[in-house]
Length: 154
Image (cartoon, rainbow, N blue to C red; front, side, top):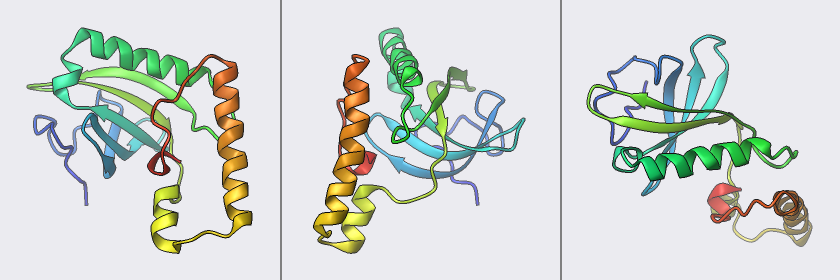
């Protein structure tokens, strides 16, 4: 069942976002927008789409900042960082929605693991920290600061 996009009732059910991305289900939502599992219409590849709330996407300054986030993320190549592959601004019947597209990662977030497992073994913690620190180190080497590093984003 298709999950309707929050904040964006003007995107009709079944109409691909920007003519390219059909949402499958919402993966998460926050104050700035939402993240969806989606399908690229042309390739049928499963991808992830991060969309912003129209109240932010209507601001040229915000859209420019979001575009810089996409460009910056697109420069970062690391085995522990998801690839960003596209950025766009989609016009709907009533809203403008800025979005970025990422490789889809099937799995659980660190927040999910902590909720399900409770305490983690020291070995598991060390393994997670090594991977996170390696990714953050590469980002910092390129002058990139994450600004939202938390278990929900790992």
